[in-house]
Length: 416
Image 1 (spheres, rainbow, N blue to C red):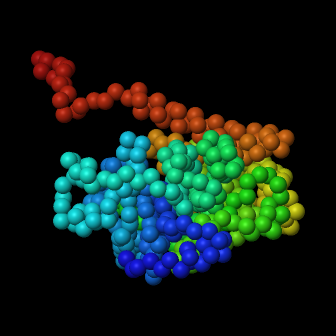
Image 2: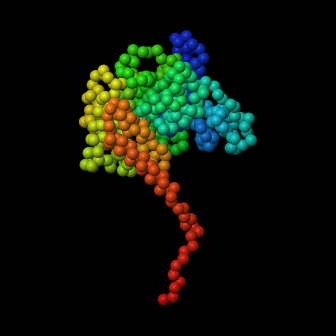
Image 3: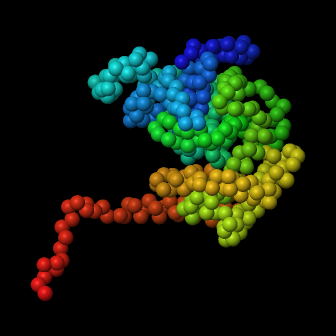
């Protein structure tokens, strides 16, 4: 990895008349999005210091077996990147893997944690920039483990599906506004597909739309006048937008929210119906019963979005989020990605929790705040939850059978 150029950090620190910004980026979550972002940052001509936060030692063992590298496959060719620092959570304490371990692990095959505790250094330093790429329902849990390392000078970037995550974090983890970290959110549209552990395929070029988050339900168009962002927010925004492979752009809070609402709509319809019917996108097309369900869902979703106080005063909202325009958006996504299965369906298949509370659940919650009863979205929410309950209890009640040691009995030897 090339040497890091700290020019951006120094320039932003001078502008803000502050010091102490390290320029280090911490990343939680190495799914498709997290792997792609970490790999893209490491691919810069002068990459910043990058620390991968891992909550389980077994996860680091797997990473170590891959020689601590992340890979992205472009057009059939693997691009491997190394040089990542790692911190592992052990007994509620973050342990830093020293840089010398990178050289040792190439030569040694022994397990790291066996009689080698001296190699683990306690790391409880301040986190300036944190990128979170895990599932929405896991965000509160993973941030709870690093909450003591965040301050009002920190910036958290959330790359996730769904809405309502920031409000949940403020309520559960950061109720004190004085010491609350700054937030950014992003919408990632690159086509990514997992190929192996710590390796993904780049299927199609997309973009990463970023914006600082403005809390509260006041019209976001007024927030565009406020550009007094924290130095860590400015640094992270500049770093990502100047990373070529991310194709990242900065937008206003109102602009980003509109992108998020479009993605939310697609997930509320294709994701939820795909999970309930256990099918791919193509199986939801050209089905009259499904089409009727989609239209009714979109009527509710459109009504809630157009009534949001955050979007008040923004021209064209009624047209952009009309039921018919949203229907065309959903159909186009299903037609362009016919073989895709929703993440909700995959979560149910593997008996994991789902993000449904941050999808249709968010529509129901905001609808109630606005005096609307979103009964269809509430029904979809309950159907997904009930399907998850059925799958888990069906698996739990199954009786395991060892077919290799089954003793067959019967009257096979009975005389005629």
